Image (cartoon, rainbow, N blue to C red; front, side, top):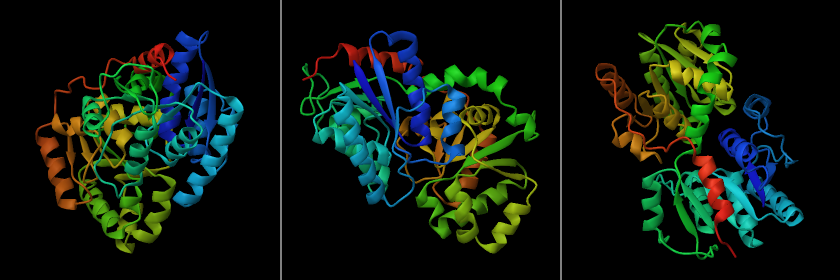
Length: 380
């Protein structure tokens, strides 16, 4: 069986590591994987380091689309992916998450009748102003096999009309939905101890034995709006008075800090001894930071989950989340870009740190489960 895997952004590269590892270790005699990198993330610190560090096979194709508007970027990727699918004639295309690479792969494959496997199906923020929400909805409704990491995702698909008990053969009009657990949990378990050995970021940042807050900010809904960005940094400046804060800077965030953050706050942030602004980190470095942090503040969906994996409270810098379970369990708080809500969330977690983290993301073998189902299912 031939699979074409589409990756383009950092999280997809990391997720693909789990699937490629499972193919190599358990399915190498039954599955051939062709990897296509769209080039959506083209900075070496944002992409190449992940292939080197995680042992992911080199991409068979790279479309080198780079940065552009949503329409231009998606069009270039759709054209390139269609050409590759026509050449390779795969049994399935594998798509991850909700990026423009995901959307392009879904449109290209559906139009030429290549069955789609969507990993992370069913996630919804219920905010269609987010490009990611549009991408994930379109991909789900173009897919033949939908693998949802959570029961909430299964319920979302049910409410949108997906049957949960249909029989094969499966098609785009008769899709199959599976509850599989989270593929990122596979990776976190696999790489957690490796990260302690292969990275020295905790020592390099002089954080050993020191409590610190780990923060990431990258969504354009925060970075591109000065009032929101300033509110978040008001909170970070306030928290830095009694906490060390580590903030790996996404390239877009680093650029927009200089234009969208007030001069006064720029001076405070860049001169602060308590706020460590650092370049983008590798996946292993991020795992090490998450494991050692006392709390995580982020607008990243993936980092929200990873905080939960490592039993850390999380303040979510968005008004909603796809990962509703981590809020429902009391281990994360939606604070949006609101200084007072962020500070209130910090006080709550400081005074009453969570101690119970139910196992809601599977058993760490999601990749093997998915590959087994892909091989054994009946499709037209």
